[in-house]
Image (cartoon, rainbow, N blue to C red; front, side, top):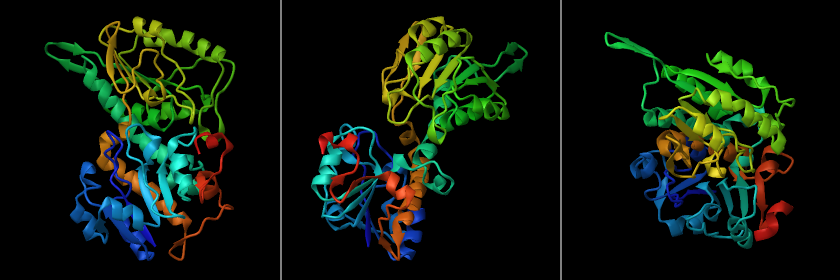
Length: 377
């Protein structure tokens, strides 16, 4: 069996799907690994490193035409500006992130070619799938980087400092959304010396917040919003309106607000209003990790940094890609673990009784499996 790893073509995407360190585990299973020339350069991985671990270097055309399985970071047309991923042959298998919650041209392209697509975002949150959990591994990096973005934009230091010229008081950081990204943001901000508080609609995370040395901001909204798999669930507008009202008093005394609230497959909930931004101290910063799905802040412009009411609002997209070296290593582990779940005696065996395989298979042998995604297929 041949596994191919192409160079990513989505604008701004610097990650690669497979790192050299995970190639020996595949070759030991009898798999031939082929990598497009230059695929890892944006992640600091040279062609020579791939060769040293047993991979073959080939052209893009050769890769798609000759691979049984193609490992990707982003599946082509699912993302604006990417080159389509050509289906080289019927029965070919694509594995990668594919924005699987809404119809798009990539599904039609893969279905028309008689191929199969597995979406890594749909990995179920169960114990034996932890090593495959792409959303968690990338969110961890995004949480870390969000604090650095906030610290860089803030016109103050994070830690307290006592000097002969006077005492500098520590910056106040407020993290909204305490999932994987939020917890890493809390830990990173604490390491930098800030006074950190956090809030989440799921009251169960209070203990986690306090274990990191931060204060959990409690808001009695009359309903807990924890959904399946530990994710937050979407709530109605009345709930969010009460939440915004209570949050106003917190943000007016905050130097850096980091928002991480996300509901898989849904637009990011609007949590920070223009009124809140106006109330923040001049020179303060909002880092909106929900920017890719519209933003948690009303004034966020995805992919841009803007200023409004003397507040800097940062709306980063694809944050993990800015840490492409580490992100590629983690993603590579995720996708290798998933591929190994598919393998039996060195060949892919699609077992729909396996809950991990069944949950992630979006297109099977040219058929789009979900009715909600057939619009474009």
